[in-house]
Length: 251
Image (cartoon, rainbow, N blue to C red; front, side, top):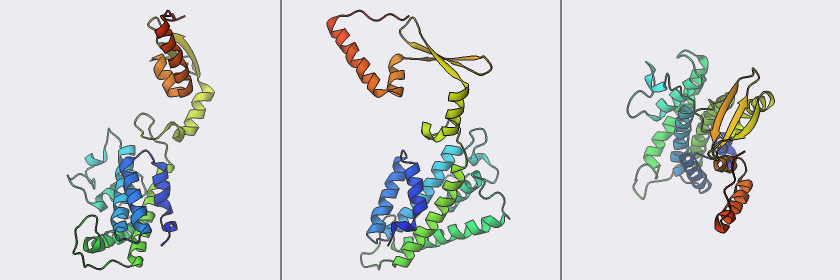
């Protein structure tokens, strides 16, 4: 058994390190796969569904959410595995219409995964308790499950990476917006002004001459931008508090 069978799953997991449940599912998959256990089939299927739900949450339009689409696959209260996969593929425009030829290719992948889910029902020790003397599945079944799951996740991940998420709603870190960050840093300017209450007024100057004021506490600015500076300033302020020094006036 080789972890080279699921490079797409590994790439997706590495990209979403900040997703706790996804990471837990991935850890289960790796552990059970490495030990040649049938539970890796449960974990592979669980990872695909978790990936679909994560991407839907990340990209869904609050004005027109997937659940409100007239033919939404996830309108019901308890969507199936294939419903989540279908919704994610449609949201990412991987499959647009029912007669899209590519949809037939995709359907074969989740048909295979669904079929392997039947094997999971028979032998999967995670989702269903089974008789202790039941036989394990073969390495071929486990490999097929991983390959099918990896194909689905790879399609989703590659399509997602071609998009830049909405910075207002995204769960992605600052580094994900490299192009946008460079554009802002190139064409906009920033100046800082202290207010009378000891806070900081940041003023962003736009290329058209307009200004966008952003009020922020000094501690929040330091904590978010430079933790070492935050610690240095904190220690100095604690010393000033202890020795009774005057508060620094703005200006």
